[in-house]
Length: 600
Image (cartoon, one colour):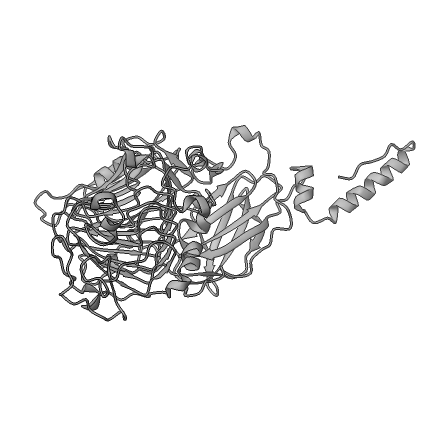
């Protein structure tokens, strides 16, 4: 900052001061100047630092050396009119501001930011055009043969918000005070609910005589989580630490931005229809992270980051119980682009099944990142597993038992001890003392494989070369059917060739591109705010908890200060201090994100 030397003559001092004032008047309000002079500037000067398009969303970040109590943010199609976004989507992180804009169909958009000074917009700044891409709505959750034919939850299938949609915003401060009117009977009577758990409780109201168990309130509901919401913040969780999404329909639970996190609790979905869960970090859950339990239909869980849960009582629960479990009659579900961080037991698919049940599940483009087992473990279900990245898994990848039917297609297995296993045969008994089995003593299922890349780990025993003690039938083409002469050694299950008999439409990537595609797109927006680099040389074979990662998970805090429209930008603790500016050399993108091979 410029400083005045002591001058002996007052005239010289006045002249110098005048020169400095003139110099300051001609300066652009840079970040360096802002950091030194604080709120000297009387006019706001918004400095855009980052912006871009994401999947059915866009975002913008900015700084302002002058403290402003409100901002207006607008979004527009490239050649369309601007629409103002909800204030709650605008947040303050102490050193910068950010607005995320969900609910956008694929296309090209512009974003505009303006400081609102006593009702007058100042320092209006506009981004370059950003590109928004569409979510891959694929798999059994979107099968035309399914009961609801969609799992877009509170959204339309193009990612936009339906006309009848209700939207509520959940922070640690509003989770118990948010209000919403809910339909309670066939006449349309309204109950005014307060708090998230009460809203979901009354959304479950339905006619006891309705055989389809459809709730009275079928309007689309979008529940948007902002920042970290812990179990200490929320009232009304059940005894296992779950938020119950029970007997509900047409609901999306989504996180906003990179840091939306539920901490110390999980989500239980039961007897629900058309439910979407997306862009949420799940940490320190008490039972399962996300549990689809009992007669759910058309459920889609995607782009979530799932870390360690709290240790359970069993020796295999040191990292928590199941990360994402689906069981007890749930059907037509898709799980895509989720990131599992060293999970102990990723996903149990089917429960207490003695034989084939025929429930339909899809796993695609998930990142099983140094997790140990159950990717998934399948009991009695019909499961399509494609384009997942199995990355240093210490126990096994896919496990099939109790008559399950599994098609494993175009996945990439890197240093997976056993890529696939069928219980009580092949590698499951070959590499264990006494032939007891690696993961299950139940009857076997059947696995067909095609187009996968295996890089490290044990080889898969092919039924074509070993017709009894095999791990899978490795097909020479996708259309090849598995002959009925191949059977599970225990239980005698044959393969039903569901994959060649009218499977849904989907897009499959070359397995060689899968690591890049999945690592670039799995998990929350931009990979979330909790990062960790695994040491492959150690963690590929380690099934124990990583103390340093565990400490990072347990000690996690969002850097969010406040969300506009919820509690205001500046808490009293800031004493009116404006945010510290970021460096001026932050590059500003001119278009959307770079697409990896195989992306559209």
